[in-house]
Image 1 (cartoon, one colour):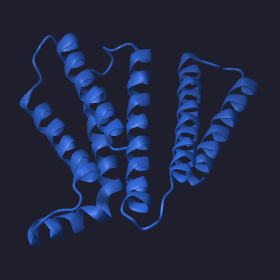
Image 2 (cartoon, helix red, strand yellow):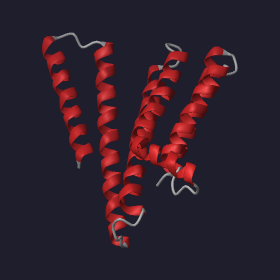
Image 3 (spheres, one colour):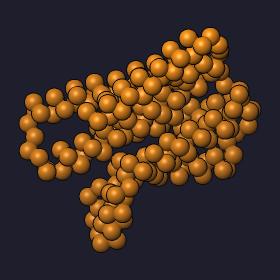
Image 4 (tube, one colour):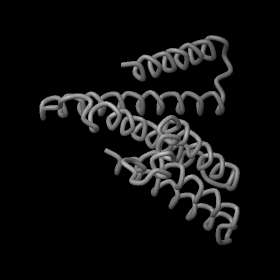
Length: 190
């Protein structure tokens, strides 16, 4: 479960480094490397720092346990902010939408991984193979719904930027965006 968000994180970082090099013509600056390293440390500590040995390591794990979702969110903000501020206006809009989708996929898969580990993988609940299959199918369905609704909202936002100017079309577009937000909230609570 934890390998999927780690793979998506590696794809995001690789994309950032390649895009910055392509659009600026320079190697990444030291600030970008430091921020990427910070995002990696936060993400990997939230996803993989478990079952520590030693008193100091257990104390650090206790601190990290309460902050796992926050660490994932902060790493998303760092990676997204760095990408969009460093190549603002240079990358085509559709590529930026795909990058946002990868950030959302990373956040959602990391959240699912953390919740799975907290509830099922540490022996709190007795698990059968049927339970695991139902859980994974449900998680996959929720993830797919969130991603589809996110794509819908990004596309509707693009339509607003491109320009629907009639009063009916603007009201209809706003209603669709509110509906997509409410569906995303509902999916996250399932």
